[in-house]
Amino acid sequence: MDVDYYNVLGVGRSASDKELKTAYRKMARQYHPDVNQSDGAKEKFQECTRAYEVLSDPQKRKMYDQFGEAGVSGGAGQPGFSDFSDFGGIGDIFETFFGGNAAAGGGGARRRRSGPSAGEDLRLAVDIDFKKAAFGGEQRITFTHLEGCNTCSGSGVKPGVKPRTCNTCSGSGVVVTVARTPLGSFQQQSTCPECRGTGEIVEEYCGSCGGRGRVQESKQVVITVPAGVDTGSRLRVRGEGDAGLRSGPPGDLYVVLNVKQDTVFKREGQTVYTNLPVSYTDAILGKKLPVMTIDGEVLLSVPAGTQPGRQLRISSKGIPKLGQPTSRGDHIVTIDVRICWKNFVETSFGAVASVHKAKKLSSLILRFESFVVQELLKRCNGCLVLAHSLFLVLFQKKLGEDPYKHNCEGEGACPEACGATRRLSRERKRFL
Image (cartoon, rainbow, N blue to C red):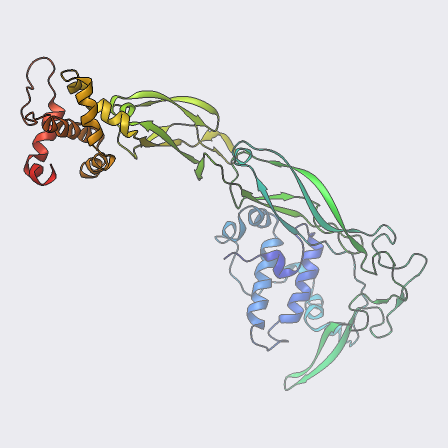
């Protein structure tokens, strides 16, 4: 499973190089093995180092944003200790891990104030129609997010009131503790519990946002859905996430698509599937039949002797490829042979009926129940031609004729019927 490097460092996807560097310093100071001996600290330090190595490199960051961890796994290096080349001098390294002016022997924490912080990214699930997923289009979505408070301009402070400097941390936002070990004394910084790292104490908060600097609002936007998306596809809407803190940049909105099922079409990747009802006579004799595709109706040639369940392909009538709309999948049509038992009986006896009176034929047909025809299809493994031939055999036997005596020479030859007769001659007593 891919690791979200932005979450590892606790920054948004639009974080600047300076924000990445600040976030990494904070994480490194907290989890460095020389300072933190707890279980998992070393692994956490290696993880944040790996994240910073990737995100601080513009080329690697671009590959990671596009392909995730797989895009940088080949050449981004292995987790481990950074060379700290971007931290300046050795003094910055000591300051990062041990706080204050440790490199110069000082014991106090450097004054700092919390700056702007990027807003959080949001995730929204949206249902879209089958054809809109195939061909693309515009989709109106409604969602709620945090927007900057207009009353206090996002500061969280009541208008006209100025915050005062925190006395506990002297405005630095951190407090320094000294840890004594057999190796010597080390300074360790932690967030000030009084001001929660802001370096300031607010006497009166804004009444509109309760001091949060942000308020929840509902919003509608129109997004463009590209052709070829599928369930699980994710669209990024920049700047529509939660507003940032202290005038920081907003996060992004990630729209996760769910394609609704269609009553006619089924989809697997770029391939579309439908069923086509075909009468048994059309399946035996063959015919061009209209088929509904996602582009509209087209004519499909059903070959003679088509069996139930056979699949016919219509090229380039499937779903467009995402990012390449001119490249399309295929449409697969599954033949669903429909049998009207009355028509089946009458058509099957058509060749023989001409030599018998209609009244006698009608009385004989009524004696054949539908289960006989069903049994024929079972015995023939769904083969319509064979079932058709067997019905002729049964009918002639009812008329007292010899069903196994056929003239297959000259005009009017019937090799299919005779072939079917020979195939069943061994079990005719049990079956008939």
